[in-house]
Image (cartoon, rainbow, N blue to C red; front, side):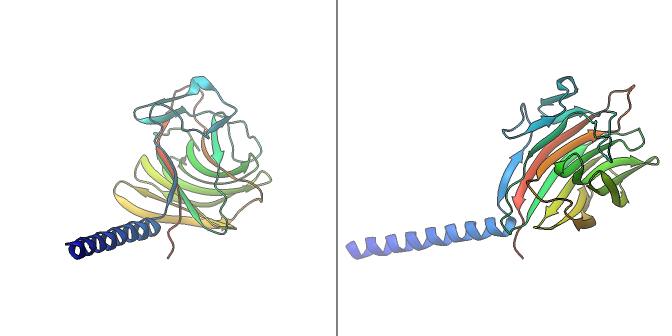
Length: 227
């Protein structure tokens, strides 16, 4: 009887270890999630506003909604309201990916919603949904010392899009996907600054005479899965 009990215990322990090992391997393969916010009812701890206009943002069951400001972050103007930021994790030699699910219905030239790797108003890399010459597009750009450079403009066939930035110690890559298509790369560049970056959402170049409310339904930050 004692021997049977020991055998059953040994089998149970081995099965438990196998399960734990499998779960750990799966988690590592998928990339550990460091942060996720669906903005339902409130902002998660850690977010702060730059040039907040509290009348131009709200949260609800569908996520964060921000009325797009007519100001600009591209180049030296740096007067857009409601720039949302939170500290980026210390990479420590690893790589991370940041994704944001956004939706907007732009009508104004250069009206945009961006996911941004942000150091300050003059140093950042963005990937965003933007209206360019009447065409809905995903635009990736880099800014250093307020000098802005467009990396790519890619046609977009959906007003709902998931944006992604993949970041290593000195490089950053942009990509996007839509409900009907998988991930598509839109470019890469060197990081524009050293120091402590922040993850940012930005909403600008909207019309002054109309209310355009962009929606962000999720932001996720996770370690990039090892390959």
